[in-house]
Image 1 (cartoon, rainbow, N blue to C red):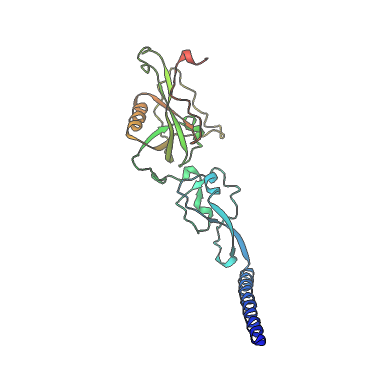
Image 2 (image 1 turned 135 degrees about the vertical axis):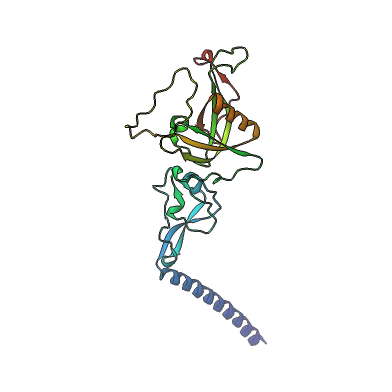
Length: 256
């Protein structure tokens, strides 16, 4: 009786050991198979990324995976070094390798609507000189503050005074387009015009830019009115930027 019980226990132990050996061998075989295919580390998208996203946003959505060399695309990237200032040219989906052609300069991303427009908002475009668009360094997916300047009539009590206000906060940029050569943005109705950048200075951006943003109907009214009868200036305003509330700036407030 005891011998039969002992034999049964031994058989169970042998079965368990055998299963462990088989699993270990299979795992080792997988690893040997991958190592035999010259694995390469490449960036793989881990979560969806919309078109127009900055490289900073992209960093949190990609991981380095070891993939057999024969399965790696020729233009697959293994680092985002050197991609500063670029944006995604198309929507990226989890599981795909990050290809070099998926990253372009903001100027190359000319397709309006490349960034998802939240429900209830509408898109409106306006043209500005580079110094009014953060030196032309904006990209689709950024959020901006919109300043509106009036040469007069901004305050009822002081109808003859110039006024400036950061009127619309954290506005989503959906597209940035470089205007065709020779296109000139509408001059701003300011008391003194700022000198135009010298085209011989290669360090300065030249040419106006077409900016498209997504806003509600009320703010669309403000932007169109300001583009027609006032002037507009943009700041790069991230979602966590401080908002100290509405304030109208006048000459008297400038040195306070």
